[in-house]
Image (tube, rainbow, N blue to C red; front, top):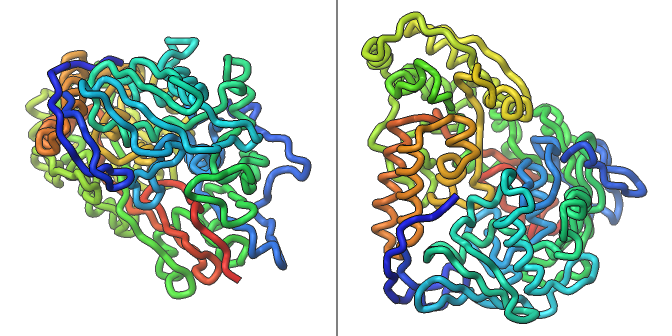
Length: 543
């Protein structure tokens, strides 16, 4: 990935998003081995802590099972990313509930050079990893550089695309890290939150990193004691932590299950104090006895096409399949009303939401007309889908909607690992219905759009978008990221949002609402997140 446009920056001032202080700114254009050895084994979904233990422990049930390691350079599963928010720190972190940035390992706001090409960050005094070793600027530099310049350039870490504007990171002294940028990047103070700091000594080479993936060590308020795909995770208080969000309980147990009824039973049976992804049909029954929080989320159900395969290389065909879907009916039937039709790539709850120029309101006649214009008749294809619960509920309704316009789709549902590892890479792939939520890493449009529309993984390898559109969108995003003029950034983001809406190589059908339930008589300070995962920073037990 590369950035473009290196216009000359101009100097100004703004309020820091981290501390509220006025600061100068520069206007700038491996699951197989995943079974941690804990003497008592992993937690069980039926384990209950009784007596005094209830006052110092939190138990919760998540809606996914562990499907990746914990190395934050590559962790992608919902369970791992949620756990990592408790285990690791960035220099800056985003509050899981408000999504607002705060200083974590950084002692003070990052400072920028006059040309916008260098940033300096001071480390928090006395910061330590959970094994007692000091966090140093060398660890910071290593954590970023291992993502920027991996040992295997053909297999870049998952986080690389989010920090492609950084050229290098060095340690000026034991507690000062300096960042050299390829081009100025206005969103730097918040974007560095995507990189969690890891000990250089534990991740110095591929072999060490592989071991670290299953036995992570961070500087966050908790440390990982055990992890299992079958039985969940157990975290305990990191006694070496001295940061802004100290642990308020001794342990956290994350039970994991994809079975919605099991999560509800865990809460109603008193085995846990919180569950995520409350089944929409159970919301009313849980209200009253439990606190039930509903939040509009970015999390989307999308359609993705092989844009190099006829007839899906014609955007009119892609558009037709979107117009044919009565999204309100799908949301009412499959989500019991807990969702919103996509009127942009961004969800309507996003602070930077802008309605796209192309909105796929239900219009079966228009869908038929577009197919006719494209010269397509009797279209038949396999609709591949992931086994996400919401996707499985939505997919049959898509098939029925397309049948009404003379299109036949046959469902093929497989786990995500099989879909992206085997199905999508093949030349036979045509259309995918799946879900995605990069908002776990941040909610600014630049980050959210880079996830699906920038770099190689999605645009090139998965939906095979032509180079002209890839380059166009990447250039717009890079130009927006370099500008400190909010109005200009918004205008540029709108251009990118309109392009992906019209072209629809990968585009949302709907954005879901996330529903979390918890026992407010047992938890103090807990707030639900508008994304996947449960987060217990600043949360304590009552009683």
